[in-house]
Structure formats: structure tokens, C-alpha cells
Image (cartoon, rainbow, N blue to C red; front, top):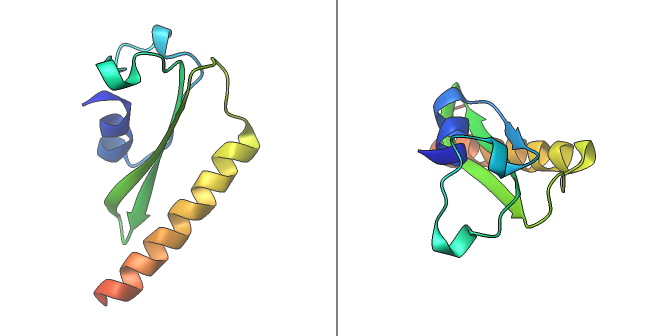
Length: 88
């Protein structure tokens, strides 16, 4: 399932500073240069609706500010999903 799958399954942020050291990182041709990855689940009403995922070729590429920004975007998307689906 990889890192995105882990974030979706656990409903928690997965931040990997260096993918070389993470056994869940899936190496595929399109992503072979990825060294850092940040996967943030979009959670609404206890359900994971999706995952925002960013990658970088440099290890330790993402800061706490980057993570906070993605968390904010994920929260906004979750709220929009709830409103659009009428799950409020």
C-alpha cells in the first residue's frame, strides 16, 4: 500500500524524512527520485476521504510549516466534502 496507503489506513499523517529508510515506501519508475514524502489524510466524520501527498527529491525536504499547511488544506477539503455530501 505504500506511504499513502498507510496514511489512509491509519487516518494519520505520514511524514518520512528519507524514504530510503522506510520499508513501506514503494519504488516505482515515476517516483524513483523521491527521498522525502508527506502524506496527509483528508478525514471527515471519522472517514478517510482521500490523502494529500507531496514528494521531493531531497531528504528532509518538508518542514513543520509544510505539514501544517497540508493539514489546513486537508481540513478545508474535508469540510467541503461534508457540505457537498450533506453529511453534516
